[in-house]
Length: 285
Image (cartoon, rainbow, N blue to C red; front, side, top):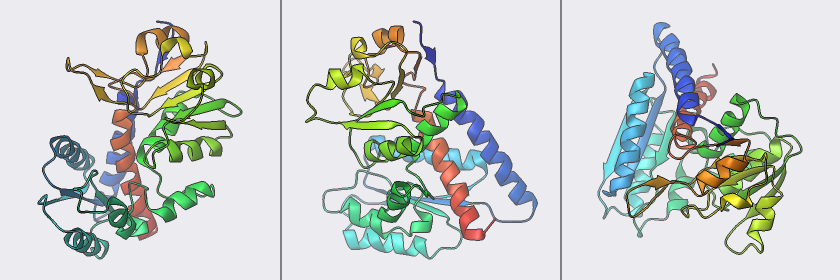
């Protein structure tokens, strides 16, 4: 392997420690801790794990954490009522609804109902619009985490040809906006893209978030490219792999993120960062 590994776990830990220090300083001044509320509808096993990790991260940072568990047969009106109650709760600075939600509930309607100032997932149309206008406030956590990783490694991406694989509202689209703010030339590729290998082969920076195990072949990677793998896929064997075929890609890239231990830890770290920033905006500190 010739690529340098970007250790997201270590970067995230340093960020979380800095957040813990800032929260501790607030508490020492007699001020309340920032608060995060998570709504979990149903008993999806993976969602339960994600919510538990978020709760533990809040506690480790000294933040106030609330988890609202709602049954899988909850109505949209009931979920919206829970969101509206949290919007009015002055001890809560950040609200997120763990996705996916059951079929009878519109995820978009629920996200849109979260107060913009408390939208720590950064999915509200107003927050995405601010990102598009290059005046971001609360930013989608995974793309924001990717930017922090690149900054930590002192990788100057200005002018790079960047290819984002995947066009989801959670990763692909906001990732493209983040890279545009960094003065990259950005192409978004997706399931209908013609000649994906050709697009990847010319890219100086690849962000793969298509959700298909090892879909991006290592031999497509341009020598010296930066490879950010957002994928997290479990094979039948139980092995966790990303969206990029790591072994060959690592022989060609200059930098690469491992899976696990790359982008994943950054997402929760940036959720903590967004919660602190939401608190600061709301309390003007």
